[in-house]
Length: 121
Image (cartoon, rainbow, N blue to C red; front, side, top):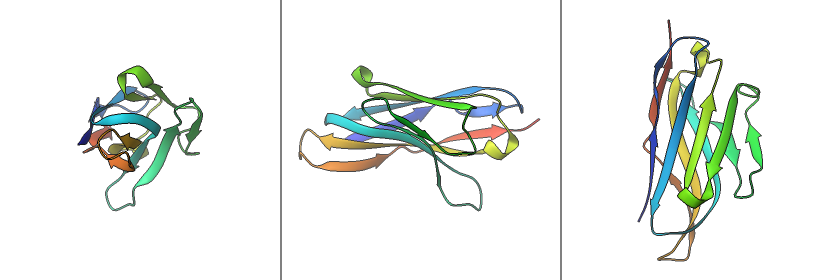
């Protein structure tokens, strides 16, 4: 059993900052890529940022220069620092991880339950 739990969402004014956290727990042997995705009302879920186990990152064009993804491998954590937030960043943000299960020895993709980010004055 593997679980991902996000935290850190909330209401922030345009131009403000938030830091999202995601903790992976359970029967984890190793974690490969981790990432953040978001889904706004009436829209499809989209990639925000990803990070490999080695630290290589990838960002959506819409967040480059404003968002920073990072991770702590020893704690099975991934973070998303969001600066200069805009109303169009409003969405539910989901954490995703590609995990090798310690029990099944199979690789699977796991999602968190999501955390709401609202950017509004």
